[in-house]
Image (cartoon, rainbow, N blue to C red; front, side, top):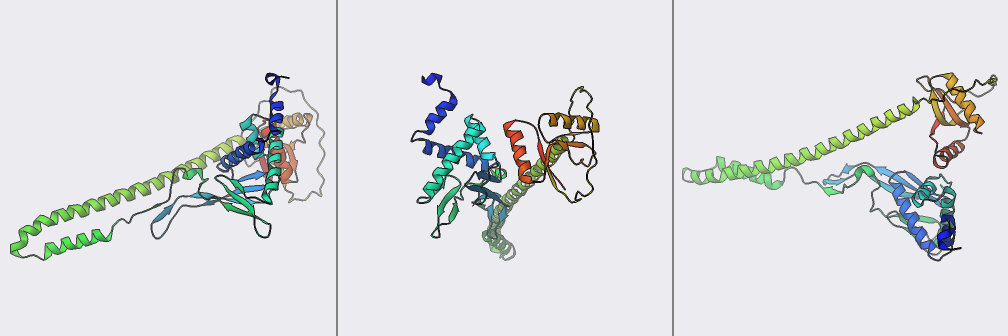
Length: 342
């Protein structure tokens, strides 16, 4: 079999057997972890742990040191369940299937666990992981990368005071020269005082312009954040009010049975919503369609606007609902969203 006739899967399997696999895959996975930390608060590595980001607000110290908003990285070795984020991102970047990407990550994790017994694992731009004297995992963040996209391009700086002691002394000296003079020296003092006045006015003007620019920039940034939040709320409202045109379907007889009376009122369901309908008939048709496709579909709790929600499935476990959501979105490329019914 020639190289031209090899499929992409066969080429990948041959590459997995080479000695360069570990180094290359480690570099790729480390780069994808760093890219995902800009977009997600949690990036889980299956069977190894999770990198978490923690947000800090901008602050100005008493000495005038300005620090922009930032996100710092921590590591939690207890979060090992696969949430599909890293595997899906890897599969999308490398143009391979989700199962192949997951297999590559699991192979690399096995290598990390062996090396961790005698070495320090380094994740460029993120931090280092090693075993301490008690053989427990210790994470040391790199601390040089700010993963807050809102602070992109901002750096810490020291803000100069609006008026220095030198300016105050110049103003005091100019006042003394105006008040304390003799007739013989009046001409010389009148020549010096305008220069000092103009210098003081110029320094104050520059300080006021700097202050107006700084606080104006803060105001524009705040308005952008508010506009983004309003746009996100409008998008969520449009998704909830979306309707589906199912065309003309044959009438289906549905036998409904009354729910048992002993169902607890405070039961919490975790649903994966397929869509919302204004008509109960269209909602029931959608439920029948999904049931025919093999989904445990059902009507979910109606939204506050009176729309009937149809769920791919309603679960008592949040984990089951999240797994179904990732399967629909990343494997089947279906539109769906998560709802917690209380």
